[in-house]
Length: 405
Image 1 (cartoon, helix red, strand yellow):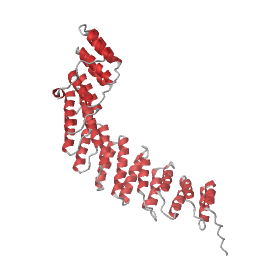
Image 2 (tube, one colour; image 1 turned 30 degrees about the vertical axis):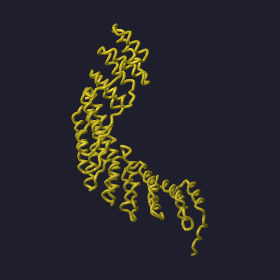
Image 3 (tube, helix red, strand yellow; image 1 turned 60 degrees about the horizontal axis):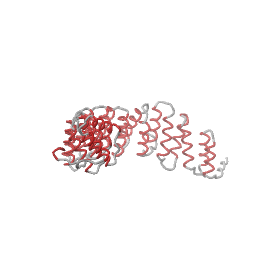
Image 4 (spheres, helix red, strand yellow; image 1 turned 135 degrees about the horizontal axis):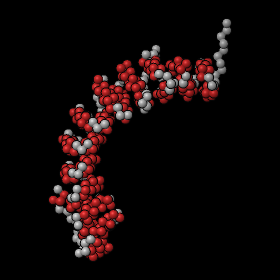
C-alpha cells in the first residue's frame, strides 16, 4: 500500500492565518500537526492555539501535549496565559494544580520553572481573596518539591507576606515569615519593612519594635522606612517616651536618624502638648548634624503657641527666618494671635510688618487679631497703626541662645 504524499510546504504566515481563522481548535491543531514535517509554525501561531485549547477542560490534554512538543522550553510569556486560562475554567483549583504538576513537577518530561513565571503566578493568585489560598498552596508545593534557589524562595515569600499584610491577615504574614527560617532562608530588609508596617497598622507596635531589634542583631542593614513606621505608630499611641528612646537607640546602633525620623517624633510631642520636649529633640537633631527644615520649625512654633509659650515660639520663628527659611503665613498667624492674646500689641504689629517685608501675605484673621487688639489699647494705637501702614519695624529682631534652650 503506497504512503500518502506529504502536503506541499506553506509559509508560516499562511499557516498562522489558517490556524487563527479555524473556529474549531482541534481542527486547528490538526493543521499544525499535518504541516509540521514541512512548516515550522510561528511562535504566535502556537501561542494562539495553546490559549484556545486551554480554555476548555476537554481540550486541556491536547494543550499540554502541544507544550511538550515544542522544540525548546516554552517561555514564561507563553506559559502564564495558558495557566491563567486553566485557572479561569470555573473549576476547583485541583485542575490548576494537576496541570501545574504535570508540567513542572511529576510529568514525564518536567519543564524548568522560570523564576519570573512563579512570581507572576503568585502575584495573580494573591491579588484576589478567593485565590489567595491557592497562592499559599502553590508556594508550599514548589518550595517542598522543586530545588528553588534561595533568592527565589525569599522573593516568593515576600510577595505573599506583602499580599497577606495588605489584606490585613497579619497572622498569615508572620506564619510565612517563620516558614522562611524553617527553609534556612534569611529574611531581608524588605521582609522586615513589610511586617513592621503591617503590625503597626494593627496597633501591634511592640512586636514591630522587636522585629527591628531582631533585624539589627542579624546584621541586616536598617530600613529607614521601617523605623519611620514604628516611630509614627508609637507617637499615635501616645507612647512618646518609647518613641524618643527608639530615636536614641538608632544612633547607638549605628543608624543615623534623618529629618523624617526627627520630625515624626517632634510632631507627636507637639500634638500631645509637650512642645518643650520637642525643643529638646530639635537640640539633639542639631547636635547630630541634621538640619531642621521648614516643617520642623512650623510644627514647633505652632506647638509652642498652643501651649502659650509665645516668646519661645517667636524666638524659633526668628531663628527659622535667619536660616533662610520663609515660614507659611499660618506660622506667623500663630505667633501674632498669641501675642495679641497676652496683650503684646507692639510685638504683634512688628511681626505683621516683618511678615510683609518678607513678602508673605497675612491671612485676614491675622489682620483682624492685630486691629482688634490695637483698638483696645488707646495708649499705643497711633504708633502701632503708623508702624503697620509704613511697614517700619522698631528695632531688629534678635534671639538669645537661652530662649531656644
